[in-house]
Length: 281
Image (cartoon, rainbow, N blue to C red; front, side, top):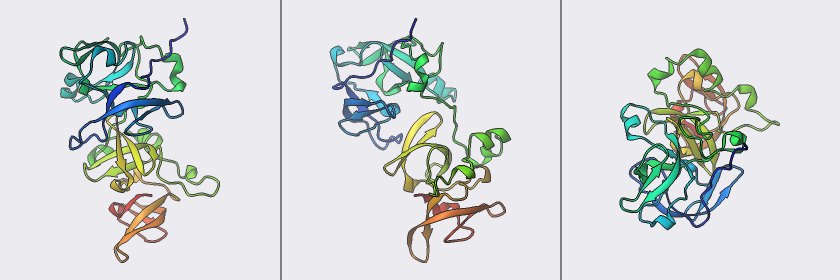
């Protein structure tokens, strides 16, 4: 039997948008405007191209306004968090409980709205896009890799083949048609605020989407820095921004190489540049 198409949230559906993973910023009330097939994102009245992983159900609604039965979602289990497993569980909406503003999912009843996010299966995973498939039968198509942010100690523990094939971008792939590449999908970045390393999933409008423990997090490019670890280092030819102390401002630069002994970068504007002074452009 052919797989059914996954249920998308229709225009006019009430939801909440999570602008950042930080608890400092609350959810924003939002309304679905449409869906973008090209990048599998939703247009909201508060933000275009919103990632599904940042869209949660609205709470103060009626059963008629709730997300429809069959909607694909990801559920973040409190029990799994306590066990140290940050990945979400794929689930399907069954019904809404007006009494306590919770959802009944195929994997549990009375699921808190704060622990639910939209799940979208990309086109390339269409053959597994049956809304009836859940955590017992499949992994969500949007979660292609089980990626964990690395601290300095953890990087050295990774198998060589993982670091070489999954964590870095080949230098040969940096220059395309003579143009210098900027930080994008596949590059790793250091997040100084949390002292974490995470891979970039996409960059749009000065915002980088990073995969942190399976959760997509959006950060401004200026909040990111070049990784110090050689195996995660940015390759030759990468276009970056370097903070010049003498000029007192960020200037455009290009990576010429990495210094293993000092864990610094050689740039066309500065030799042995501190990674903390090198960020994406």
